[in-house]
Length: 322
Image 1 (cartoon, one colour):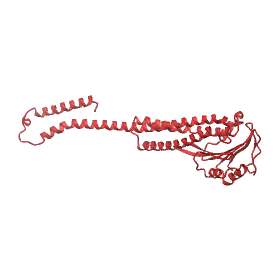
Image 2 (cartoon, helix red, strand yellow):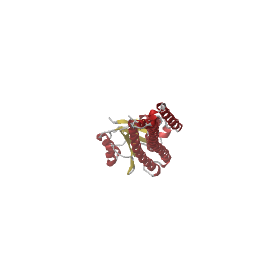
Image 3 (cartoon, one colour):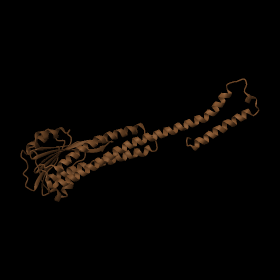
C-alpha cells in the first residue's frame, strides 16, 4: 500500500482518518481539510483518488509518469504542482519529485524517488496547530520549505569536497582522478542550477499569482521560500566559481613548477657545459697544443673548470635557479 497517511484536520488538529477507497470525497467542514500522502502509487490507487476528488486526468497522468520538471498547472479550482527534490548520495546529486494536488479543502501529495519522508514534517506541523489551521496553502508552503531545506546539505557537502581539493592543489599537482572529479562536480552543479532556476520560477508564481486554493495572506511565506532558493542559487554559482579557480590555480602552479624545473635543468646544463667544452677542446688531438707540454697545465685546467663552475653555481643560486 502506497498510502503513508490520510487524515482530516480540524482547526489544525488531526481529527479522523480518511477512507481512500470511498467513491465520494470526505465531508470536510469550514475549518477542516484533508491531507493524503502517497509514495510511488500505482495506477489503481491514484485513479481511485482521482474519482474521489475529481482530479484532472492530465494531472493524474503526469503524477503516474513521475518524470516532470517543476511546474504549476491550474485546472479549474484545483492546482497541480510539481516540485523537484534532491539529495547528495554516493558523491552524486540524486533527484526525486513531489507532486501536489491542491484543492479547496484537500491536498494530496505524491512522492517519487525521494528518501526524505514527510512523516517528520507532518509531525512538526501537527505540533503547531495554530499554523496548520490556516489550511492547505500553509501545508503547500511547509512542503516547499521542507524540499528547499534539503538543498542546503548538498551545497555544503560539495563545498567541503571542493575546498579540500583546493587545499591539496597548493601542495601538489591535481591527479587525474581529482581533475575528473572536478569536472563531474561542475556538471552536477550545472544541472542542479537548472533545477533551482525552475524551482525559483515556481515559487515566484506561488507568491505573485492569484491562484485557487492559495490565500493571499500566505504569499509572504512563499516569499521566504523564494529567498531560500535564491541563497542556494548564489551558493551554487559561488561553488562553480571556486571550481574554475581551482582549475586556474592548479594550471598556474603547474606552469610555475614546470618553469622552476626547466630553470634548474638549464642551470645544471650550463654548469656541465664548462667541463664538457674543455674536455672537447683537449680531446681533439691537435699536434701542437702548448698546454700539453706545460708542467702545471693539468692542474690549471682543473682550477679553471672548478672556478667557472663554482661561479656559475653561485650566480644561479643567487637568482634562485637552483
